[in-house]
Length: 335
Image (tube, rainbow, N blue to C red; front, top):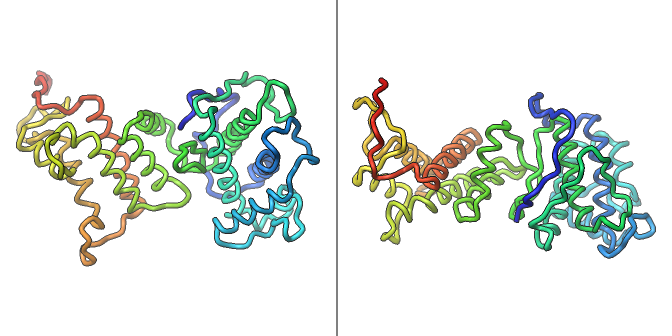
């Protein structure tokens, strides 16, 4: 479940700057401070009114660190079982552990916070604070535990944005955490495609996390892209078929003479069934793992997966918004 409101950004955005995959000191310091806040939030009783060390449950932190170690499948050096009480200070004094451990732990804490928010009544609302007022996790009668968690998420968004990090926050409750940052215009297009409450958006969201998230799974992500397009194309093109696939949709478009809302006017450039039909065949036929034939199998690489993602977004929006029909578009007089 996604939040409907988000705090307005203040100051200048660095999204146009060169994005960095490294952890420079100027971003490591605020990330470590964020870790301290998040650990406090996750290791206190939700009914506790004050965020003070006296209310911090060290046993909860031990359990959380052990869970993190199981997640990353390695022993971490800042475990309370090793006598480390302050993760933030430890990381600030051990730069050799920043990459990739710092990002992994931030993503782990973020995921736990988002899962708490997504299963609560808070899921449909997000704090809309005054961006010109300083944000704080100090005790306040008007700030609830869930609001504090939400401020944690927003603060991390701001840190990553200001630091020109290649990572940004993903609040998709199915695959929460950190995800690769896109060009702002591309991000707007993707956000629109993911905002609908239908199967196509759900499959696109899964593919988005698998292709652009920290834990890559290009093959499964590619398969989810195909399912996203089929979720809209199948009921429209082959509503009576129980075995409709994207390839069959494309073939039926050829037989039934479907069209995209804009088509080439010169006959030599026209494609029977519409200009989107070759893209549908290309998306389907480049997923070799669907054949179950080891001799034909070729893993999906990053470049192909990302290219397929943008093709799938185009196809989903075209079918969703009625841009693919059986009605021939009006010819333009402009050559």
